[in-house]
Image (cartoon, rainbow, N blue to C red):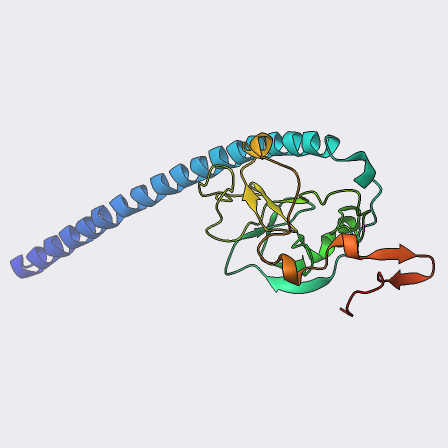
Length: 220
């Protein structure tokens, strides 16, 4: 073998060695990064699972404190429409899993997978009607808060994080942290800044045979 051939062979061997050495380090970095990402995802899932359990305990407590006269208040049916959750992450209010494409109630904002629609019937929509002697209470919906939501108790950002985080009143749209629920100044809801555009359940009555409206009210 000539000296030129031997030199060319040696150069090729060094090039191959350098290529293997060069590509080996990024692979190790990628594998290490994936391990860290998987561990972070596992810790995050366990953390938010614990947080959600705490939220459900608080919600159950709040429900037990509700006015007894509203326990049998008639609720409207959900008005579903197909909704894409690409612009803002959404979570199913039934199975609590992430939604990419599902359904959303136009009335109360309840979100669900299409496959969870049947089970969603047991979750109430807005109260249709209630006696005028009973003040309107906040009706809280868990999770899926609008972007840049602010807790009306502590005035800090809320609704951030994975899962069904914090609460929103489906009447006045006020948002609140789970931890701030016990500090709400009053359970009475004034229907929010759009109260003049909202049909209050005080203004709706139900009679046998269908819907009706109180005398003196405009058609809506």
